[in-house]
Image (cartoon, rainbow, N blue to C red):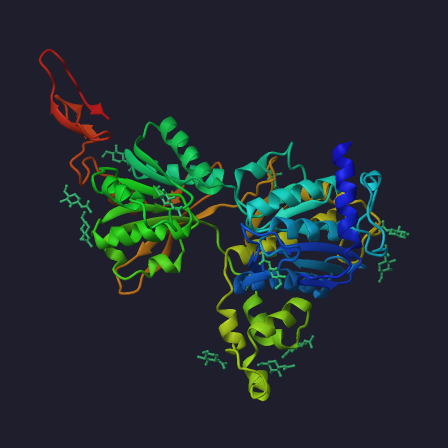
Length: 529
Ligand SMILES: *[C@@H]1O[C@H](CO)[C@@H](O)[C@H](O)[C@H]1NC(C)=O
Ligand SMILES: *[C@@H]1O[C@H](CO)[C@@H](O)[C@H](O)[C@H]1NC(C)=O
Ligand SMILES: *[C@@H]1O[C@H](CO)[C@@H](O)[C@H](O)[C@H]1NC(C)=O
Ligand SMILES: *[C@@H]1O[C@H](CO)[C@@H](O)[C@H](O)[C@H]1NC(C)=O
Ligand SMILES: *[C@@H]1O[C@H](CO)[C@@H](O)[C@H](O)[C@H]1NC(C)=O
Ligand SMILES: *[C@@H]1O[C@H](CO)[C@@H](O)[C@H](O)[C@H]1NC(C)=O
Ligand SMILES: *[C@@H]1O[C@H](CO)[C@@H](O)[C@H](O)[C@H]1NC(C)=O
Ligand SMILES: *[C@@H]1O[C@H](CO)[C@@H](O)[C@H](O)[C@H]1NC(C)=O
Ligand SMILES: *[C@@H]1O[C@H](CO)[C@@H](O)[C@H](O)[C@H]1NC(C)=O
Ligand SMILES: *[C@@H]1O[C@H](CO)[C@@H](O)[C@H](O)[C@H]1NC(C)=O
Ligand SMILES: *[C@@H]1O[C@H](CO)[C@@H](O)[C@H](O)[C@H]1NC(C)=O
Ligand SMILES: *[C@@H]1O[C@H](CO)[C@@H](O)[C@H](O)[C@H]1NC(C)=O
């Protein structure tokens, strides 16, 4: 009861708040889909001071373009012939969360309001039966924000589909009953990494994680997988939260000397890009020439693969959720952005004026750097953007099932409850372009990972896709590669198998054994480590 009262009072605070302070784009339709994007990455919230108002900063071009993918996909659905949802148009209501939990909560409450009567707040007693106009929500990016949003949308049984939150926590359906995602959870990634190590017949690894949720979950899960597979973990290093800021410590020096003296065949780094950069820079400085496995946080990071002398760090394998281009989106940005308007695009031009318009007005204001549309299109990414596109397609497929549509008409009207739509979305099983998608019972998609290899043969590092992994299936990678990396004695003179008459004997180093003749009276046909 206490919680309900608290909730009512929070709701009324937000609902009486009419002035919109943060960025939002709305377009009317028979059915509204909500969207949450961290178009700004940060707020000016400070640790030491409390202020009632927050402003957002660190404008993010990629997230801006991802929010426009949602609008693009909805537009395309509304315009495609034959009609996908005859008799209905889809509208959107998209908010910039600034990557902030409080702002995202406010946006979510706004989404769940009855929009035809914005003065009226939904009261707790309305919740099981209330009909918010928003029938599904796409977002958010960060797991932490998605967790907060998931708890609120569950009250109205509104389906939430995240395009980038990978935290395994969100798989727990008793906590987050209406949460789904179009990106694989970290659990599958750690399985994929362990399977790659096994495929190459590597017997010793080192793991570097961090004490944030991503790094901690990743390293714990990797340890567990390797233990079950009988692969030796030489060491696991958990970096502190301040690792990349606190240069006064000797954390980095300790780690470097640990890596230097390690005999691990592969070193897996499962932490954020800013941490990895420091480590790889040292690996270059000291010419480590090791084998690294990159988690998705850094496997395609230009700030790392473009480091001068990256070749000296050694070889890099990596994982990234399967990448695809959003069909025709790039063309759309280049040829249609200048005559498309919504509040978020208008706001975009204030940061990056369009070059042609810019020239005309440049004398009045102090000139900002202008950007033409082809340069803007270069910022389109092909992992998260595609997941946003998929999320829209999944909702539309759910609607087609619920409203019983064929190409000529639908047999139900738009007065349905969000929970009905959620139940249909959960059951979708269809193909978008070349991607087959359905959800498992935890709301995780049947989507896999690309296995990457950083090819440093030329002066510029090329990231190649060398294989793939789908949940609960075997890893797919070329046989030649497997043969190349499958050795019986490592570069550190550790043996993995011995000939008849020999046995493996542990060295002082933890994961390193050598072959020695069998002791008198013992016999070995073949001894595998
Ligand atoms: C953030 O910016 C707003 C508006 O500029 C200002 O009123 C507020 O005091 C700032 N907050 C902090 C914590 O600096
Ligand atoms: C859908 O539209 C078609 C033609 O535009 C019309 O004949 C049909 O009655 C409409 N169906 C519903 C459920 O509104
Ligand atoms: C919104 O409020 C209006 C007026 O109170 C009501 O007639 C309508 O049914 C409500 N709409 C939804 C979707 O709950
Ligand atoms: C840096 O690390 C040292 C030793 O671990 C600690 O004493 C110090 O407080 C840290 N400084 C910051 C700014 O975190
Ligand atoms: C790495 O180990 C070698 C041999 O033990 C030693 O000569 C070298 O100084 C070490 N390098 C670093 C950076 O610790
Ligand atoms: C790294 O070591 C391999 C052999 O283990 C060698 O072929 C390669 O040239 C070395 N690379 C560098 C940059 O030293
Ligand atoms: C699938 O994507 C490709 C490449 O973007 C595009 O050429 C093709 O038309 C798409 N197919 C469908 C059915 O949308
Ligand atoms: C925008 O311009 C393109 C061609 O430049 C045209 O095909 C499209 O219909 C226009 N869209 C709008 C909304 O005017
Ligand atoms: C938008 O850009 C296209 C291609 O650059 C151009 O043909 C078109 O006239 C522009 N439309 C508007 C409304 O500026
Ligand atoms: C767009 O800008 C880039 C550099 O900012 C330039 O190289 C390119 O030629 C421009 N493209 C067009 C179509 O103006
Ligand atoms: C999805 O549909 C295919 C047939 O198109 C079927 O073979 C498969 O079992 C379905 N998967 C699930 C999880 O329902
Ligand atoms: C790796 O090499 C070992 C020993 O040479 C061999 O038994 C095993 O089949 C190889 N594994 C693969 C996947 O090729």
